[in-house]
Structures are given as structure tokens and as C-alpha cells.
Image 1 (cartoon, rainbow, N blue to C red):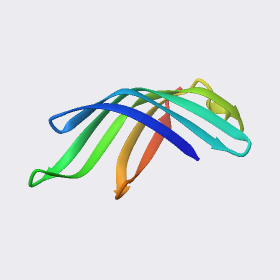
Image 2: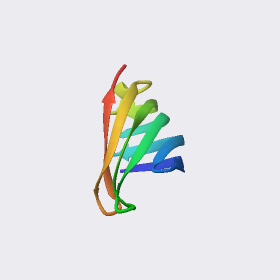
Image 3: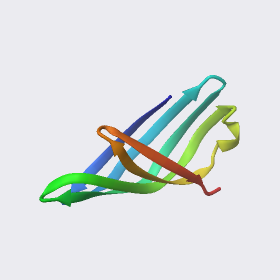
Length: 95
């Protein structure tokens, strides 16, 4: 289970992350991440939002248990919608 919080600033169809963090838990593992940078672009059709894409950078601030190997690692992320009120985030570790 993962809990996320992002604070965005939106301006004319784009967004910039002001802050973000997440906590992920499962039996035997715990991790927290800090979002360092992010941008979001809305796709518009006839003036209405019909989709979006986002990407950015982050760092694993803490990882323990089965996730311990991720402690302190940096990552880039991308996100896109998968349906109404749902999305997928893909992380790629860089260090």
C-alpha cells in the first residue's frame, strides 16, 4: 500500500510540483520517497481536459526491511492516467 501527497501549481494547462512525498508499506518492507522535481501537462480536447502526463525526479529518503536496498537511491518517474481517478507511476532508479 502506498500513500502519496503532491502539491501542484497549475498555470495554463501545465503544472509544477511544489512538494511531494510518499510512504509505501507492505509486510516486511517500508519506504519513503521525496519528490524533488515534477511537471505535468494536460491534454485538452475542445477546451476540456481529456488526459495528462507527468514526470520528474525524486529520492528514496528511507527504506527498510525487504526494501533496504533502495535507501538513498535517486529515481526519475513518469505518470499517466489509467482511468477515472486512477493512474500509474513508473520509477527508474538512477543511483
